[in-house]
Length: 453
Image 1: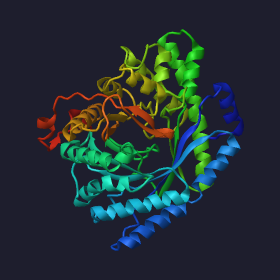
Image 2: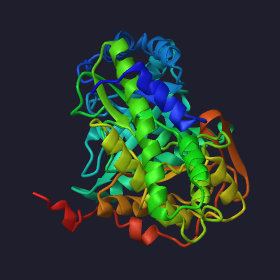
Image 3: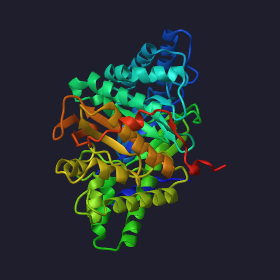
Image 4: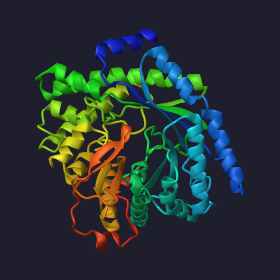
């Protein structure tokens, strides 16, 4: 598919862009050839390889920004899930590897490097247990490293043992970073049905079926969609869906063009364009505001889930028409702390944890950037993660939990990280116990729909 400079200019003119940016160009790098019996040699191999492919990533992306006049908000790197090539290491070794990743990211000039990860939906190796044990220290002793762990899939079912371990890791991470509003938890995601080509942090990693190196792009554009809906006025829902689809089509074309140009500049293959609508804390860049413009009084009102389902469906349909390289998550994200409309709705009590969970059944990812009281029990967190995994497994979709048990904070308090991570009100969690259920351990079997062969 060929793209011309005039096409991107037409896209800019037609959409009257506000807050439109390319959210991230993420360079995926395989580390599968970096293992050595000597940890120091392994660390050097990791550092050298990331620098070899990524040293000009930021500079090249900025040149493309300048050439085409479209901002690229984030330039990032993802690597092979660390537990795979380095399965023989212990927890303290993994912490050293995390510091190496952090050092490489700082040298390149990126804000986050993702892939301190493990895939344990069916069981755990000794090395994967060690990696999970290392997460609280690794995230407290680094600034740029992001971690994700896949604990469930439609094919394998739900690994409750893994969920309990991750819930404990989340609590320890919150405590270890309590001096910074438990920020470590904002860099830690628990997945069901994680995808291998997701360019968005904190859940990105370079999957084992990916090439040696690849460039994936994540678009954004909630502000553009919001403007289009407002301009459309009082049309019926089918017509409104068409308005959204036309807008997404245009920004997908723009996003793929930019991604391909950055890949070309880096001298690496282009992978996918993730068509997710990803909000920021900036006013006018909110999924919540889109839902309100569609007609619900506020996020959490009756009709919210239906409006979100329609938005997500329109995004996917338009993206698939615009590009043959759609991948990643591709839908609408609803992170509370990163969306001013979500923040306000949660703050005034219109948006509850239970309503957010219902919304995750019809959109991308899941319970994202949600702050809860710091004294929430590990078993309650495990129950929340298990519920979200069940939605993903039964519906054969990606779901995730990025939850922050804010150390020393209670309902009504805030965690405030500034920048893209934003701030979030501490939300109420029901005090009913899940201990006897999650404490059974084992694995919830895969559903009937897993038998697709």
